[in-house]
Amino acid sequence: MTLQSKHSNTGRLLTPHSFQPASATTPVQDAQTKGLTAEALRQHRDLAWGAFHWFNSAAYPNAHQQDRQAPVYGCDDRRDLTGGWYDGPDYGHYAISTAWSIALPLLTWMIRPQALPERIQPMHSYSLHRPAVLDLVEPSLRFLLAMQRGDGAVHHKLCSEHPAGLSEAPADDQRQRWLMPISTAATANAAAVLHLAGAAFAHSGIADDWQLARQCRLAAQRASEFLALHPESITAPTSDDARFGQAYADADERDNRLWADVARSWSDPSELADRHFARLWELAGSDRLGDAQPGWQQLNFLALFNFLAMPHQDRVLKDALLTRMEKTFHAERDRQLQQPFARLQASRDDNSSKDNHSKDNHSEENNGTLATLGTQLLWLHQLTGRRTWYDAAFDLSGWFFGHNPHGKTWTTGNADGQVQQPQFAPLISGALQAAPGLLAAGVQSAQAEYRDEPQASANAVRLDAQSPWACYLSLLVAGPR
Image (cartoon, rainbow, N blue to C red; front, top):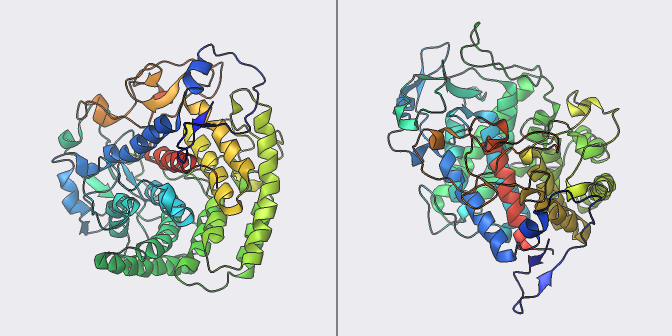
């Protein structure tokens, strides 16, 4: 695969130190990957950012107007919860995945602001006087603020008793939607991203954004105080017959709470507590930074990269962490070089620590996991300047664009090889005629059958996968340092 340098005036092709695959079983792979120029990759990047629009509830006229008076489950209270991103493939809203999906673009912006596009289209509303990434996340950030309770705790989700079917358009879903009880996992994720957002919006040139930054910092502080008062895990309960869905299953909240504790330094630039740095040090030496499948449920890496992105943290400590992390990523790179298709694979060590949330293999990886790993590699490249990590992320890119056992380009669109029938309610219902740029979950095994149809789980699209995908493409297009 080759990539044309965006800084070249000669049309010179930039070729990373790519692997030679152990086997090449897909006959169409060369045609689908070697011709991907920088311009084509930029187009994919722009579509990936624009695809957030399809998750935005405000993009659908008259959608879920009942949320203006959403009842709070279990008490006599109502909230205005209009706006925000759908989780996908359906119309649920979850504080945990919303916080995750805001955090990755903001952290990418803090690490390499010029990597993100100057304008994102389509977008429901935007200002010409601030960075596009702030336009993108602001509505969902305000939605997250509206999910916070007075004592600082954050409600887990907004959903109906019986969810709408995938064939139902947003405007046709008139079911009452309830703000479900709080959870400490949602509170920790919200605290972390609100601390980060407070720092990010303080850099805006718009006075109203400075007020929003202050609001975020205050809300984050209340959430952090609630967590300090409640060291025990409070899971999101549902009704006895599970009409509102299953309770959040991840009982190990150390990663959520560590991310919140570290991110607090965005608001209070004091020295990180010794116990927190000790935990970061331990994770930096762990396989995949302690996350078997990094994503919205496994967040140790976000604590590490938040610390490394903070300009006020001690440079010596950050360099020591980076050196330690690079040793673990070298092992990841070595495994990648042994794989056909350069796909990042699971560790061969099945004696995984409990940091991996009791998952001792990576068999449930999907394209969102891989995009998250690619984003990590590119963050590491930006922080160290080491070309190895850019090359590893670049080599991975072929997997998404046809260099895989099924010869698929795992994004939505009408081109040959793309996913044309994604599992996404606005499309299935006819509310949208097209939604290009979405990342599908994909098929990770050569033995698994793939069918391009809405019922296929491989065609499911989710907000929490779109966020790392857009960040990954932006840093890839930005090129090596």
